[in-house]
Length: 185
View 1 (tube, rainbow, N blue to C red):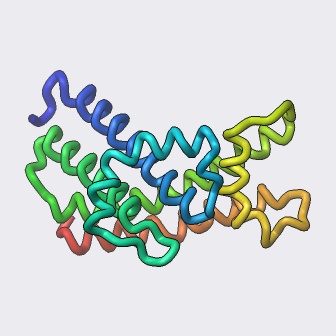
View 2 (view 1 turned 90 degrees about the horizontal axis):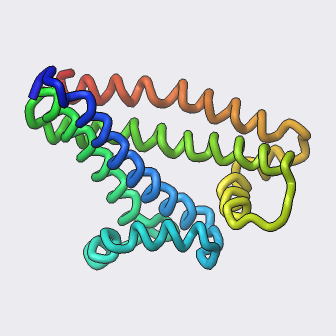
C-alpha cells in the first residue's frame, strides 16, 4: 500500500485492535500464572473476551503444568498478525517469519509493561483508598509475586518498577537484534 492517504490510519487501527486483544490475552495468561481469583468481575471480563478463540486451541494445545500454553500462543499469534498486517499496509510485503519472530520481543515488552502499570495503579489505589474495587484485587494478584520478595521496604513498588525497567532495557534490545539477524532485517 505504501505511503497513501490511509496508511497511517490503517496502521493505527491495526495496532489498536490487535494490541488491545494481545493485551487481554496476555492478561489472561498472567492471571492464570499468578492464580488470580477468576470469580472476580475483571477476571470474568477477560475470560469472556478470550474464551471464543482459546476454547478451540485448548483442544489441540495442552497446558504445560501451570503455564497456559494456549493463551501464550494466542497472544503471540495476535502480535504476529499485528506485525504482518502492519508490514502489508506499509508495503513491505508478506514476511511471516519476521512477524512471528518480531512478536517475541513485543510480547516480552507487553508482559513487563503489564507488571509496571499494575504496580503503578496499585500504588495510586493505595493513596486513594475507598471501598472494595474488583480491579484492585486483580492488580494485587498480579503484583504480589514481584512485591513479596522485597515487601519489607516502604519503597518496594519503586524498587520493583526499577527492576522491571532494567529488565526491559537488558532484555528487549538483544531480542530485537536477534530477530533482525534471523530475518535479515
